[in-house]
Image (cartoon, rainbow, N blue to C red; front, side, top):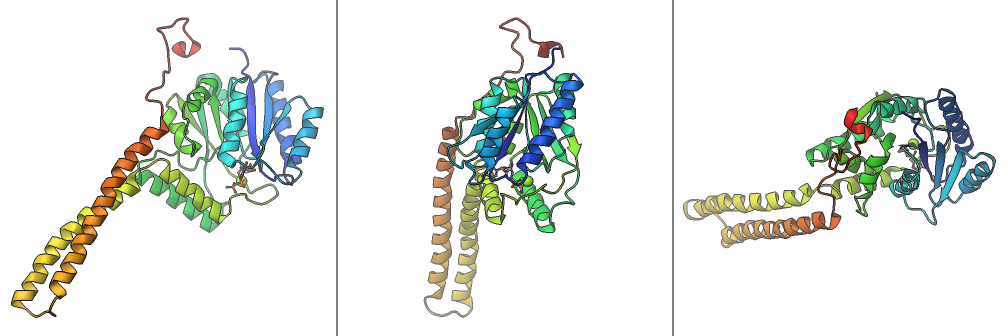
Length: 325
Ligand code: UDP
Ligand code: MG
């Protein structure tokens, strides 16, 4: 096998504090891998400036003039982490055999990228970087993150536990990803849907090198909400279940209250009032849930997700290397 062309994609938003160090370290890693004959000398590091308001772009641009391995992509405005990442992957996918995505703050262990490449060379299309433990995170972040994975699982979304957006993807896996045209992008949920041969590589996550997190609580909550609502119709189903549930309860209550009315003691008018409140409430929730079911169908249709993806095409020969590995 000839050495694969690798592009490391790094989304950056106001990262002037860490960038020089990040560039230095990633460049060192790439040089090392070149020295060990692991990747092609056409390999690059692509920094995507996600509409930063500090000197991020100036740093990237200046580096790209001095070092042909460092490339830059500047987005016209802040598009958000996931979109910036996709912009970089889309650009890189055209010219690379594989891409690795990593955050600019180097919280993820870059040494693991070597293992990613080894796995890719063994024939894996997607390699996930998975955190061994989260002891570096604050108590709050660790628990909210864990809660998030649990909720997602309950909602029927298959996520890789303790994996953020640190992963390797082959060219063909990226091409598949391009077929997911949804606007609300939640890559962590989509990538596992692609299929292909995948592997996990475990590592320890460090603290941010410098600068501040771009995911404060508000953004984190919004991100989780996005994750749930762009993958699952379970919340709508819960409304429907609640509606049917309260409608059923209203019958039991109705019987009980009627019993009270005729065999016990109640205020005048109370029985009919309380029974109709429960019954109407239940009916209304059921109706909303039903409408929601239809909206859920529309929502799924509008995503236009691909219905299948071909891994090996032995119909249109020649046979690719994937047939043999
Ligand atoms: N980021 C981005 N656009 C944004 C927010 C964040 O490109 O609007 C980048 C950021 O520069 C970093 C990565 O996304 O490279 C992850 O952000 P951060 O490290 O702040 O998140 P955390 O690790 O704290 O969850
Ligand atoms: Mg970070």
